[in-house]
Image (cartoon, rainbow, N blue to C red; front, side, top):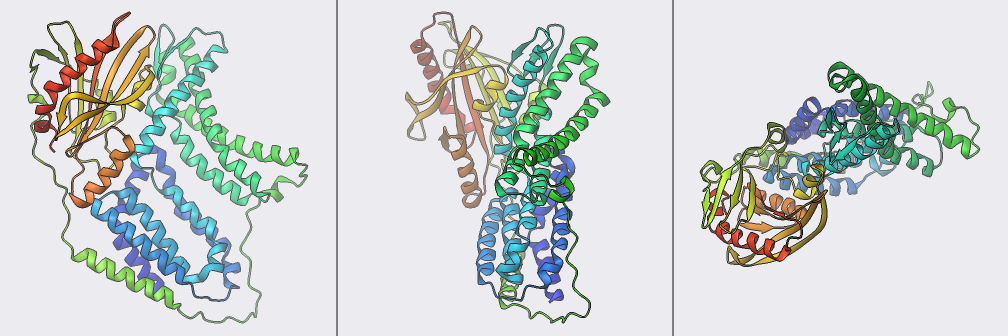
Length: 510
C-alpha cells in the first residue's frame, strides 16, 4: 500500500509540477502569500492528530473518488492547454482530494475533510480578482484611515488613495491594501474555528470576522501613520518603523480574534475555561495489544493511479505549447496625427508602469481645430496567462479620486470594427468640480469586449483554441467644461474613434 501511495504521489508531483512550482514562487516572492509555505505542514499536522481515529475505521471502497480524479484531470488538461496556472493549481487540489477519497473511503475522508480543505488557502487568487479586491480595499482603508486622523482634530483631505495632510501627501499604495493581513488572518481564522469547540454558527462568526478585523485594523494603522507623519515628518511612513507597525498590527489582529472568541463564550453563557474551548488534542492512542489488520489496496485507488499515470504519460509525449505572440507595430510608432487630430505624447510615472506590468503602452493627448482635447491611452499585453492582465478603469479611476457617476454601454454610430459597430463603455466621472466623459473597451484578439469578466472567459478559451492571450485596453477621455454639453463631447469622441479604429489592428493584432 505505502509503495503505491508513494508512486501515486510522485506521479502527482511530476504531472502538476509547473503549477506547483509557480505557486511556490508566489509564496516566496509575494508577501500576501508568504504564509502559504506553512499550510501543507499545518494540514499534515492536523491529519496526524486524527491518525488514531483513522486507524479504527474499516476499509471501504469509494468509486466517487475515481470520478473526482477524472473531473480534476479534465480541469488540469484545460488549464495545461491554456497554460493558466491558477486552473492547474485548483485542479491539483481536486485530484488530490479524489485520490485520498479513493484510498481511504468516504467515512475516513469526512474525518480529515477540514484539514484537507485548509490546503485551498495556499493557492493564490486569480490576478483579476486580486486586482479588483486590492483596488476596493485601498479605497476603503484610505477612507477609514482619514476618519482615524480626523479624530485627533488634524485637517486632512482625501483624494482617492491619496491622504493630503497639507505639508505631506501619503499615498495608500497596493502594499497597504490590507491583503498582507487578510489572507494569512483568514487562514488562521479558519484554523481557530476548527479548534473552537462550540456551535457551528460561532465558528462561522470567528472565521468571517477576520475580514472586518483586517480592514479596520489596517485602516487604524494607516490613520496612525498619518498622525505620526503630521507631527514628526515623512520618515514615520518609511523604513523599519513602517514595517514594525505592520507586524504589530497583525499580532493585534490575532489577539482580537481570541478576544472575540472569549466574548462569544461570555455572551452565550458558556463558562468553560478557554483552554477547554480551544484545545489542540493529541492523537488518540491505540491500546497496547490491539489487533492490527493489514489494509487491502482499494481497487478505486489502483484505478485512480492508473488513470493518473496514463495522463502523465500522454502529457509527457505531447510537444510543449509555446504561446503565439503575433507580430505587431510598437506604440512608439503610433501616429501623432489622426485625420484632423494633432497629438502630443505623454508618459506614465514609473510607479504606474511597475503596477500595470504591460508589454507596451501609448499615452497621447490629441486636439482638433474645433478645440476638443482627447486623451488616448492603450496598454498592450502580449500574454495574460501569468497574472499580468488589463486593469479595468472601473477599478483604477476611483483610486485616483474620480467618482463614477454613471456607467453605460453604447454602440458608436459610423464606427465599424471587424464588420460590426464598435461598442464601448461610457463613464461620466467627476473629481470635485471637474467632470470627464470616458469611453473604454477591451480589444482582445479581434474582439471588442465591454465586460471585464467576459474578457477573462475569452482569455481562457483563446488560450486553449488559439494558443493566444494577447490583448489591450483602450481608453478615450475628454474633459467637460463648466456647463458643457455631453452630446457635443460624445460627438467628439465618436469622431476620434472613427479615425482610430482603422489603424488599431497594426498595434493590437486581431
